[in-house]
Length: 107
Image (cartoon, rainbow, N blue to C red):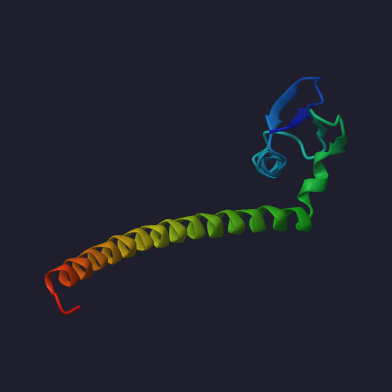
């Protein structure tokens, strides 16, 4: 959310995520030749560079990475839960073993 769009009438739109600008161009909310300025660096670029196939693939790849990340977080949470269950079961077995040893004078 670091980019501002400068429209032909002098107004500004934003702040925007750079990857969202393509959507705004395609939905005609901003023109394809609008200028974008980064609020932090003051770098200005033309929004039409975001219409290249390379930039389209960046958005697709980012969506895939986010989806994979969510799946990995879910898997990690499930594994953490399984580890907790196994630790609890181990503690039960160790307690039962100690009780059995205490009850058996020959152990």
